[in-house]
Image (cartoon, rainbow, N blue to C red; front, side, top):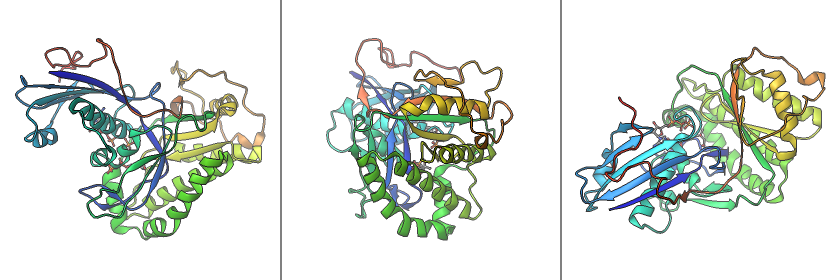
Length: 373
Ligand SMILES: Nc1ncnc2c1ncn2[C@@H]1O[C@H](COP(=O)(O)OP(=O)(O)OP(=O)(O)O)[C@@H](O)[C@H]1O
Ligand SMILES: C[C@@](O)(CCOP(=O)(O)OP(=O)(O)O)CC(=O)O
């Protein structure tokens, strides 16, 4: 019997992955680059227990039992059955990249339990493409690769988490009740119907990837922000060019983008970058010194709902008064359009957590916390 528990981070792409050339193996149409977020604020935690006493593979996610067929197929080759229990310390399936952290954590924990060495990114990629970028810290590049079997479609670290220590991240969780089109089906339809995606993949992303690596290397925030913003907008333009269109950003998302452009314009240089994934939540990148004023301004333009007692979560910050520039204030908007903010930074990759009380499974291999179904 052996039991291991690991945590793995979320990652946010600044050069987006959108479109596969092979659905089965999850091989992308272009390279992508992401920042790994600190596990202090957001992480998936997974306990894996391998035992000869188990009769079948079992999986629990956030206290609820889930089907574990995929693991079952593989374990024909493995003598012992496995119990897996995983939890996210942030909302699951809310467009906060839980699938990336979750699959990265599953693959990393299984590798630790079975003593597997070598590249894990090409395995995590097959759970969810973006998951392969959560196996390293700092800034990570997922190379599209060119081989038919996908062996060279792997993620590698570009710069570690200490390269640009001032970099901060604000996740703006937008109030939204609409059901989203999943990334998987959205990008499949884009590949089938969008001419703009073809243009993006062939003519835009290759040069932008090079420029992004250079901006990161030089720690040129102005350029980094421009490239990040442009790539987010290029991806959402392709989503809208899809037939029928995949609409991910909502009015609040657009108001946030507008806020960032006004803020940057008033400063005469890019101080904040925004990027949006397949949902309305915004992810802002900025430097530590600018966080107090940006948060102050944001709260003025997007007032918290009066009942929201912890609007800014995560890293502590003192708020400065909003900048007094009339041009900035298109608003204030009605309160609560941004539900809350997670203040975090760039962090390291997955790790094993040690200690007797860290495990999510008890000695019998059953979850310590079960939610009745
Ligand atoms: N800790 C975890 N362990 C294993 N699987 C997980 C874990 N967390 C999430 N998942 C898987 O990911 C799914 C959620 O993925 P989905 O893409 O809908 O949401 P998201 O990742 O939060 O959003 P987005 O991909 O738009 O950022 C879950 O239903 C589950 O299958
Ligand atoms: C917009 C994105 O977040 C898309 C992520 O797509 P997924 O990795 O969730 O898709 P599948 O490979 O089909 O599971 C951009 C990105 O993270 O690069």
